[in-house]
Length: 196
Image (cartoon, rainbow, N blue to C red; front, side, top):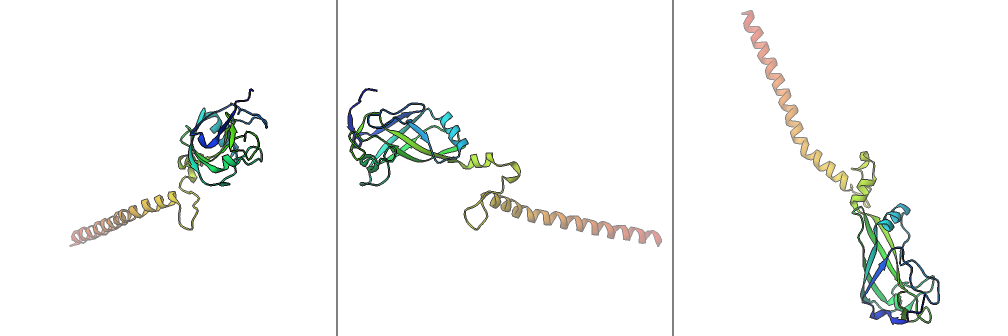
């Protein structure tokens, strides 16, 4: 690929990255524009099949060395300074997690100018609440694993429903016992009146 020339990374406002496309390269091999990393392999497969493009918007600098944004273990000073917000269309069961924009420094890994078209995104994905519910067997839907010591969301809902039903159940049983007592008393009175 022909040299696309340098551009200050700080001047890039938006990146549009495409699935199944490779980055431009000059000093190092090309990388995929979009790479799902450090996630469940089945979620990565679903994300790769769903994402056609990802848009990343520059949020500006967060100071030197804020994050590791380099390519292939070469931290780029420019990429490390810029914070990005990335978005992509995904199925409702999965969500975009961490995103890391990586670019090739034009002359060296520490170059604040990057090769045009050399940026890619490494991203993680995870399950949404809906995805977690749909991935569980039906008999476990109310047993969400909570991060605290208290009950999780599904268990709280089950407790709330049962606590609302308890008074109705009490009155139903009480009424049945009362009807049985009254019916029994009426039967005794009827039998006694027959013997008089």
